[in-house]
Image (tube, one colour):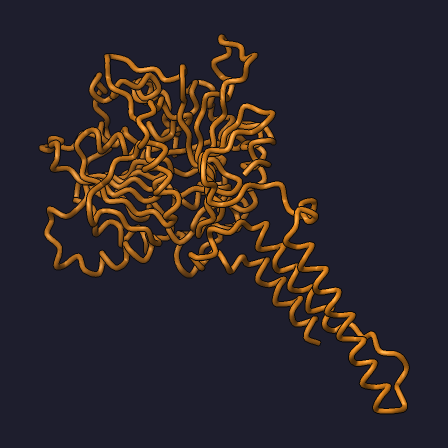
Length: 471
C-alpha cells in the first residue's frame, strides 16, 4: 500500500512540477529531480519486497528469516545508492546541462552556445547563441546564425543579431549587454512595430523626455522597452518570471528602470490592486503608453485578455494614452475575433498591423491561414481616430530593421473590418455569438492550446532540432 501511494504522489509531483514554486529547488535540473524521485520510489519498492519462506514453525526460524530479509533488502539498497552516485548511472540521466550552468557551455560538435539555463516559475529559461558555422554562406542573409536568443520552454521570446551581423545607421551607438558585447537588431519585427505607439498623434501633446511614462507588461528580451527608455520614457516593468527579467538585463542590454519600477509578479493582480487605489493616485502617475506582450509558447495567460483586466488597466492610463497589444495567431481566427470583440467593447478606437518583413505578402485571402504577430493600437478617446505621424531618423535609433518596420507602417495594416464581418457572418449562419471575454466566459486558453502545435512547428523551422534538444 505504501508503494502504491508513493507512486501516485510521485506521479502527481512530476506531472505538476510542484518543485518549480520552491526557489531552493530551481537550481536543480529536472533530470536530477526525476531521477531522485525514481530512486526513492524504487527504494520504497525494495522495502516492501517479501523475501520470506513458507510460514516458519518456530520463533528461532522466524527470527532467522527476518534477519535474512533485512540483510537482502539492505544489500539491494546499498547497491542502489552506490550506483546512484557513481558514473554507472550516466546512461539513465537525460543529456541536459546542470541548471544554472556555471559558465557558458559550447557544444562540442555544433556551432551552439548556452550562456544561461535556469529553472523558474514559467519553466526552463535559456539564453543561447547560434554561432557562425565555418562553411556559412556570407550572401545568405536569412540563415539563422550569429543570433542570441531567449527561450522559455518551447518558445523563443526574442533574439538579436550578433557579431558581424550587428549593423547601425547614422552613427548611432549599439545597445550592449552587461559584458559590453555589441548587440544588433531584433530577429522579430513585432517588437519594433510596438514602438509605433510613439508615432500616434495626440492633439496638444508633445513627447517630453523624462516626463513620459510607459508600462511594460511582459518583458521578454526588452527590445521595445529598451527603445522607449532610449527615447526618454520612464519605465514600469511587470514580468511574472524573474529569470526572464534577469536574462534581459544581463544578456540583452535592457537598462535598469530604477528602484521601485520593477514588479516580478502576475500582472492581473498588480493592475487590479493599482486600479483600486487610483482615486488616491495623482494624474502624473498615469501612463502615456502601455505595451502588453504576454504571448509565450503557443499559449497566453488568458485572464490578461478579459474585459475586467482592460477596464482596470484603463484606470492607469492617461485619457489620451495608447494601449499596445501583441497577439500571435492566425489573423482571422476565433481567438483573434474574441480579442478584437473585447477590445472593441472596451476602447473607442483600435487599429492593427502585422510584422511580416515583406508587408505585401499578407493579403486578405490569407487572413484565415497566416500565423503571425498582430499588434493592436487602442485608445479611449471617443472623437479622435488613431493617426500616425511620419517617422524620422531619431525614431529609428540607428536600427535598419526599426527603420524598415516603421517606414512601411502604412502597408502593414490589418483590415479589422474583415474580422468584424466574419463575426457577423458566423452569427447569421451558425447562430453563434462572439462574446466578450470575461471572468465568467473565457475559452481563449483552450483555443490557443489548439494552435500550440502550429507554433511549435514554426519554432522548429526557426532553429534546428539540436537547439531544442540542448538545454
